[in-house]
Image (cartoon, rainbow, N blue to C red):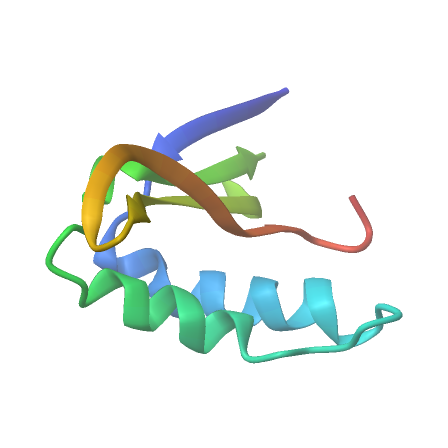
Length: 93
């Protein structure tokens, strides 16, 4: 069974490794997705409850981060939404 939980700072290193493993051997390759996650955590709009890890047998096997984004027209905010990135799963899963 897989369970979900909000990320904790102690999970950051494991998640960094998971993201690298998930993207490295893909057609597009690794494109600094782990750095993206780390940088998004520093953004003023970051909400830790929108950063989730998936656990199987108490091991992190998946990860997702939702970030706030704005839709603008002529510098006017029309709407606010959420963007999912990065999303990663261990290749063996």
